[in-house]
Image 1: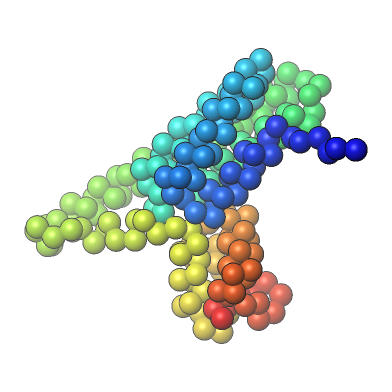
Image 2: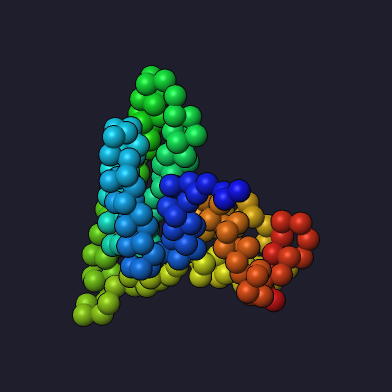
Length: 203
């Protein structure tokens, strides 16, 4: 018997790829999956609202890339989980759906507030850097293109005796699932080794 394919599977796979590397290609792929779902779920106003909240995050990631707030990926994961929840419980009461939407809308506002703080901080740092070194590229721009993978591997490299996941999350500011996905893939590629349960070092 052929297994039924969930309409959200391509979106979930695309989100994992985006989690692994924030690039123009992975952002566009995720955006396309969202737009396709929006058309497929057009008759479901609650799912449509979740997708509409997620699409602006793609534009934000496109601009910020590696310097994006970790809250942006956390939001996309939360929105995708909620979409899955709606799909699994199609008879879910309207009140519960509205509550879930309000929760995500609150997270969206928090993210936008966080983005605004980051923009202000970057603007101040850029002005300060220009005053110190006129004509030179501001130091604040260095590392903006770094992917989450590079950030995690650098953190591991700085801990010769190994580093655990909670410390990695604290240093990188990445969500738990992002860190674990990066560790899994880096391990598969032979870039890191597990010293003991939950502790990793470069190979």
